[in-house]
Image 1 (cartoon, helix red, strand yellow):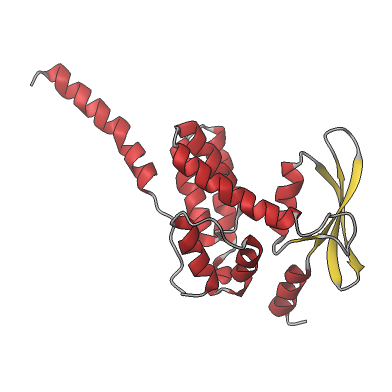
Image 2 (cartoon, rainbow, N blue to C red):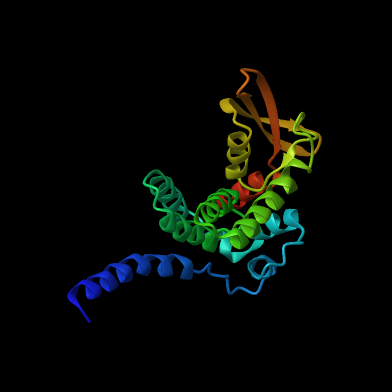
Length: 216
């Protein structure tokens, strides 16, 4: 084999190695054998016809919920950095690491499916796109968001900001509101058209978790 051919093979090996690594990165399915873990296993196997509201609620009841914290937030920051540098395989790996912590993360599903689209992986792009919008629709169909009584049911504050970003709005102010049996986050936003709107997110589950955490 000539020196030139050996050089070509070496270059190809270097180019292919990160691709294989990126494609082989796996989402870790929790081993708690609870409702949340079973949902994750079902979704990862491609069975997407689940109750996404129940899925989001089940995360709060799972031991997996206690694993979410600083590491998840650090991974999110790294995703932004890899997107900026166009390191798409890095985005895939980091997004999967986020989903290994919290599979209900619409943020992680969004950037994973968008990156798979860039990479030309149409099967995985569709899968994670459908999961992202299954989660999203489970929120936006839970009410109309116009009053606290009809607020959108959320289980984590992150979901509120995801929706605000999805509609291209900017947060102007945030306060707590009550209506009927609901405790809500009242979010005043400015739309891309310059309109000011008030959105209500029913956050009963969030306040319940805070009470458990602080023992109030």
